[in-house]
Image (cartoon, rainbow over all chains, first blue to last red; front, side, top):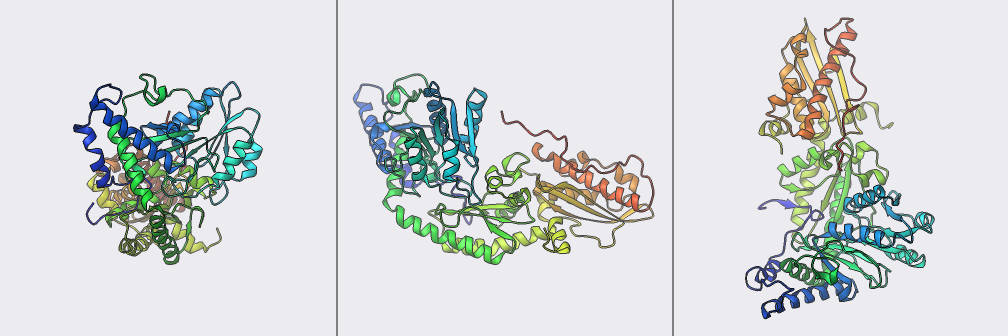
Length: 395
Length: 145
């Protein structure tokens, strides 16, 4: 990673050395199975309980409302399938949005194949759902609303409290995928009327392979993994003690300076957004200008394609991400960029840069120096740009 | 994920640019799928004397355009007609499976430019058909299930 400028913190973050240090004893020394009766395992039970308390406190939940999982994807799968199934006698209608992470979208599509009905709410040009659309989508058979806290691609933050209040008023369970928002946005599951929520450790400088689901007491859910009695009989399998400890430690570190960190990230993010838009013509910001995650800049450059842009940036030592088809493994660009109304060719030319703890002003300077040249180079190669220059801006 | 040759042709594209009074120009692909390729030919006495390209697309799309222009430069029309998408991909030491459609695009762009030349000069080139409107028509999209 030397000399590399890593601006893909929404994809994953490096595990903090202090987190690794906290985890290490649980591999070799305190290795006991937390389900065993002997002394060796006591320490591990305590470590898990301690981490559970930290997670609960971070979102204003109770300890026994937290379930450890293998990550955000499992938490999303479990919450959605488990709640949909537990309430199927009441109805089989689920409401979600068009811009969810695939962990939610593909789970909903799976349920559709199994007899459930799903409404995919559209979003406005900034990526926010309209509360009246949600209101209108509610039926007698609606049992679950699952809307993400903040979007992973364009960073737009939803008005979660408004959604939670509406769900509660209609006695519908509300789940939110908070994988990106966790430790960036203030989350209060009581005040926001959130019934279920998903988080992941590796987005907040914790280890990969561990996450958690919050489920409000009283909400019914089926077991996701069948086996032992772990996680109150709801998620069987020997606990990933080092991972769980790592998640707790990562939260502890992140919550100690969340506000300062957010302010710092916001300033770096705004430099990226403002200065890139100023330096490069025919570019636009994707997502909301203010209601967005503190670390997310997502900009579309017309006439060029995202993967080519990423390769050239990588050559210049900058790691970013794109919503182009070539980076999604299909022929279609990002469903999120299409949902906010971008035409295909503009969606293909998107660049997502997400800052993090290690990002400096010097990094931003370097990126602002590199990106305009790379964009210009690709535009010189582009037949779309050639046509645009010849025909003027009539399109 | 790309071979050294693909990276070389992407980083240092050969024959990138345009020919203002080209004998034939062909544009294929569409912006919806994320790639458009345009090839310009300068043909004299049945020989492709010069060739240039412009491409909107990923690394593989740029590299295949660049390689296709290299393969046809100085060749006769008939020789150029024998160059297939496979030949372009092989000359680049292979492409990732999801990128094979890029090499097809290069072949189609070349054929479209030759077709334009043939139409303008009222000649018939053996084995050359009118270009398809959309290169991706009929292409299978991978199902994730």
